[in-house]
Length: 492
Image 1 (cartoon, helix red, strand yellow):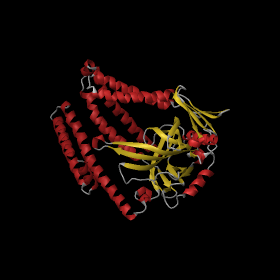
Image 2: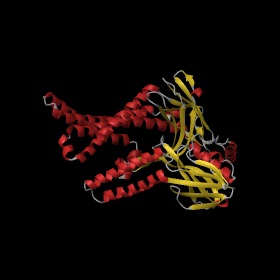
Image 3: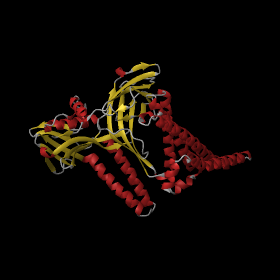
């Protein structure tokens, strides 16, 4: 079956096969609508609701699928034409990239939100209409079914907010100074948007390298977006410029020399670069997401030039409100990672744990087969361990020119470990956890890499990138290895 699916997907007949699949939905939808209209003419309004509802859902699904198939076919044809015209320049294979700009995803997100909200509510709304009140009174557990219509209301609110954002800020895009963005150089350009009420506190820019992986297929398909690297910058209101279409926001963010380039050849395992701009403004907050082309070209620096650029970068300033306590002692520099240093992350994980535990309780109450609550309980225990670490986990690190000592445990406990400087290969900050997808929040861990390849976690769940880079820099200074400027500190 997987081989047949791959052949159909990759062949020219795919649009016709998918269209044939959609036609029965169109036919059933039109038949049900006609039946509902006929019943309505005969004067029986209540029985018409079900055929009208099902007819509307199936007709929209069928004709929507047909429209999507042929729109996607046209998009793919344009992409194939651009690829044939630019075989050695993959950044010219998208229409907007070829024009030197990256279009915002606001409009496509708005359309997706409305489509998803509509179909969800069409499917879940009958639960409220047709389920008798006596059912909920006799079996209160049936109230769980109301979660689906409640989620539908949330989806409608999401769609409305996306629409208001699109109307508020207009058609926005990121115009690049040069295409593509070059690995090892600066990504420069301007974001064009409309601000009826300018943001008082500036606009936050985030440039992220994301690994997008598709797992499974069909109804079991899922998409996971892992943030591999991120740079952040705050653009103050004084840096904005006026433009004929509204406001021009300057963008200047450094791309690291060891970054992965944009790669979409494997649709199930892609590297994408996302530029995000967001700000708190009165009414609907401003947020835009742009997919940008980042590639290694002849203009990328050589290894020697990259090392020279790294050593010439200015030192990283101490963050204004660090979560990690740094102090000097007679034995060296001490770094203390306190308990509950990321309360937002801990609260979110705790809420998820409680909801998951509630699902297990309902499964046991309803007499579900033992195998289902058992596997749910295994994951629940893992979540409980994670929550303990988030609320009670601490780490104390002592760094001196002779080496690194670390003690990690709950509430200051744990065994003390000493690593002499002769065994240290590098100290680095890596993203090891995140909330959300490509535009979510990454959390950093400080890792010590020994010369035998073994890695020791010195501290984790650091939300601020500036703080994680600053900690690596200060640990490098205490070891006598230099500043490192937010890169991995490597011993000679």
